[in-house]
Length: 611
Image 1 (cartoon, rainbow, N blue to C red):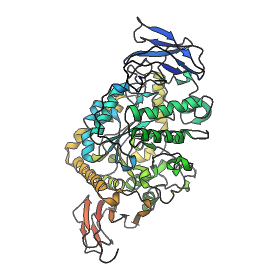
Image 2: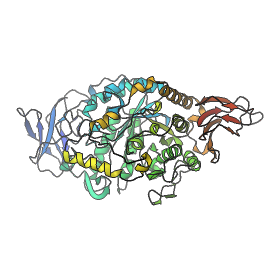
Image 3: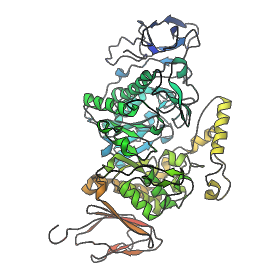
Image 4: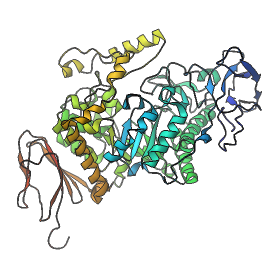
């Protein structure tokens, strides 16, 4: 082991040799026994020309330690794998090789072959831990999910939060069970045929417990981000900062056997280097996939509407395997909810939905009213649609609403069923948000657990100020009291209520999702990512649309009354799934009788004569 204080990858049982990058320090001391003031001891580290400081001393698994720079207070290791007492306390040595893996049959899964469920560990179960989440993996398997995406686990201040304010990026949040619990979770998932994606945040760090600046130039004032100074990717010392990020990504895939990484808000990774960080990361992950003998995927959250994100690095692209496509969400949600405030202003209407389902980006060089400028680029012909992850719900689109209300609070079950049909039968890679599969009624709100009074108050005031406009009063029919993120009840309200599954209403929605996922995994035409083969017929006056995918037809009726839709339905046409069966009929071959507010999936019969 050459960096940090984590046991070496060979698992030789002899502990680790601590090391830290601190190029501006004149002296660095390793402080150990730091949680026991009676036995605290220190030893000076030896400097090297590259800004690293190292020690010949070996620390065994479970040892507590920290670094003191120029005789200052001890600080946690920037590459700490374990922060059992929180992000302000000592680091602890973690031997990643102690876990005996049982997933011997696991060969990996590419995100483009996946149906994803996004999960927040803290609110997924009553206990809110990785070990407790293992007990719910069979539910995901029975649903048909084959990749679970974990919201960020990197250690953050306090016991509960979304995870996007992590500060110890190599560690796993102690309240979730720490690093060993993550290994147990991944192992259990793989044994059930579930891939695991981990959400990682490299564009900023949280406001509490961030000691990186004291170690070296991890940040730069050359660029600004929504969170202040940017991560240093192209200024003095950037090579080691980039290495810190790339080593982190590779470590999750190697030592924890993570199958995919979802990279948060990559448009905020400002980098003027000859090779962008993302391209360098993509090449390293590709090489690691070959070394490990299983696919590894990188999924970018990008606001840019630019397929350069998923184009190969050899052709000037950034090399991501896939990217989130918010425009599809906006089009689906605005159509079903009728909302037009904020960034939904240009969405809604069947023509917009048609464009999203066939061309991905609604803003593909067109004017974005919300941004006040032209935005995006067209998706090139031949692009694999499975490179775009789409959803009707995700943590942002729920949690960043003023009240954290799910679509189920404003859209009836018919609308939820239609949303599910549009997403799960699309040419894209579909993702659900935990509980969406049964129409969960629990909100999912923004919550934090900062102990500093000034920071807690600033977050509360900032959240209220953020939602002072955006049309929330009109949307909710009156003044809105934004939940206090620091109130523990805000988090408690956001926990899934698994007892909802005992009610017929929720069971019906769950079975609908199961049926759609089963079709997606078995119908050849629904497995295709050929976006150029997708056609959508719309009738804005009668309020229906039909999505054509090979011989599959997804018939969506948004009207409040039954309709007859002219649809060629040769003999042998089968109804594969229907949200409503009363009044549904194939009318002789020249039309389809369909109920109000419904979704129906058909497979056309064989036509007479040559194809």
